[in-house]
Figure 1: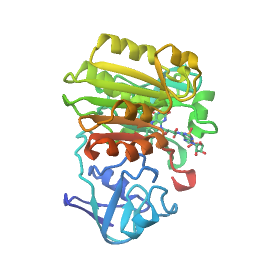
Figure 2: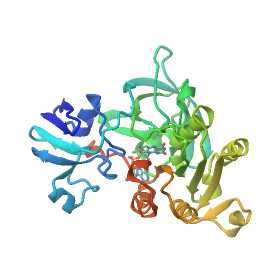
Figure 3: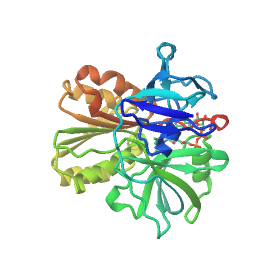
Length: 340
Ligand SMILES: Cc1cc2nc3c(=O)[nH]c(=O)nc-3n(C[C@H](O)[C@H](O)[C@H](O)COP(=O)(O)OP(=O)(O)OC[C@H]3O[C@@H](n4cnc5c(N)ncnc54)[C@H](O)[C@@H]3O)c2cc1C
């Protein structure tokens, strides 16, 4: 089917069983998106003409009212006729090529009881360019894929660093934790995503929930080591101190870079940790809101669990954050196998 995007005028074609978003990305037309699972609604667009179907059922991220008003979620929608869609401003995020490559797990290291650091080695003849904050997909049998953010910065891309949290009952992360070690071969596709760091001198707030630290680490290293200086406040939320798996490293950065301030926020902790004066208690987005009654001057970069991202999207605009200054990646689950 032929798809035309307004207002940019971009045109591309979908193949059988391909979502509108997947076809756009394959055609190098960068439409807004994040989770690609129908949850986060970043890919919401207005259907101007034509019809779509959702073979996996109505996506969770689209309310009945929005659907009735002609909104569609491009990551799950299949075109059943030629379409004209109006999508939010299309940012030309990257001129880099999305590649599908084999790679080997070079090292595998436990950072916390349920978090592994993987370092992936790519074929020597291949270059893999990406922007700080982007992610890659690990390609699995049966067309399934699992998304993981790249924790290394673009200027240190010889080995790709990933932080993988063990999902109880998770097919891929279960396999990694159980037995897949150095030498194992994976197939990846990337770089993907529009959660990328944009250089500016205005102050920035970074927010990570759990392994949301991975893309933030890439961005922070890029910002501190390569980009123009700016004031940065980094808030990292986790349940307990052990879940802040690279806290000493972040504290080293903060000591070396006076313009970087770090706050760790623990949702489940006794007074001991808080009493040490190092941590705030509660939810990470609440700590940011409490400390910044006026967010109008900031760029905000947030990555982590869907509930954290939803809370930020719902609450931060009321404290002055402009929509185009909120950048986020929601760590949603991959679609279920039947839907993949
Ligand atoms: C853009 C993006 C970037 C991501 N980056 C990272 C990253 O850097 N590090 C990281 O650890 N994760 C990241 N994730 C989440 C990660 O992709 C999933 O946790 C992973 O796909 C789980 O795969 P699995 O095969 O082990 O679980 P599955 O077999 O897919 O799931 C098994 C069960 O666990 C549930 N489940 C699956 N994932 C989660 C989850 N994340 N939390 C809670 N329950 C879950 C499912 O509902 C299912 O019932 C990212 C997700 C997205 C969309």
